[in-house]
Length: 165
Image (cartoon, rainbow, N blue to C red; front, side, top):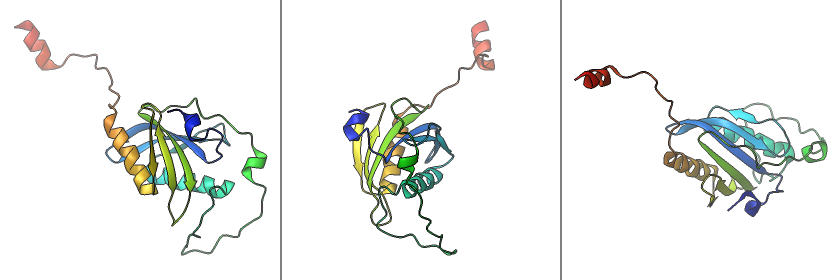
């Protein structure tokens, strides 16, 4: 299954390129249709917050629950939608060092996300019912990928001893 199968022209499509992972933690860059530059993230939580802020900015998909805060409520300024200001970019080129996921959030209901995710390297598509389920799907895919290894050029001491015997 390719990116066009999940709505290539969707304004809320995000391509997540995971460059490194350590257990349940991972970091990388995500790309969206309204910027030529990637948005770096250093943790899954930071990634989720930045993507959620993007969806708030383009107002799509719309929230069904208004988030609460201990601080003062932000003033809602009427501004021109991002889609009207920026050129739409293609998301087919970027890849991560460990894995690449194309995420299509279709709804933001019950203070979480619902949609589908495509694991680009394997072509596997799966629906998710919450942001937590999305993270678990991504983590299970990362568990199946091999960690990139660095080539070691110097011989280990015990290997030299074995060669001389």
